[in-house]
Image 1 (tube, rainbow, N blue to C red):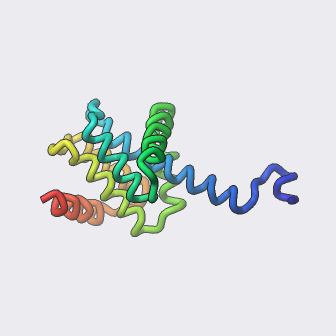
Image 2 (cartoon, rainbow, N blue to C red):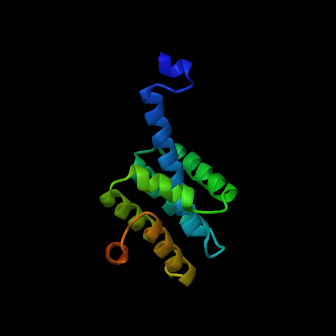
Length: 147
């Protein structure tokens, strides 16, 4: 009750807020990866929605809304640092590597890797403390899954 009087939410509300900001940050980074080559096509959009559904256990409609929110947040931000900070603060190293795999899936969704996508993934990896070696291994795992 004191927390609410001072303008703080309950512990449950704070946890929900943290989870929401984590999800939006992940969605924004996925959208940025899909958009970096100036072409966010339907195939990439479907990959992003599928990844959001799988990672966060969302229904299709919820994943669609999260994708839209991630896109709005990405469009409103001039930099990736805020999104990366949310990821770095809330995910452990293994979960951050999992996110990098998700980013690789989006980058490779159109069957080609644009140099801008590679550079972006290197930059994001640095911002969320995923070493280049782990980033490269994540790429190899995604390529192996894709056949």
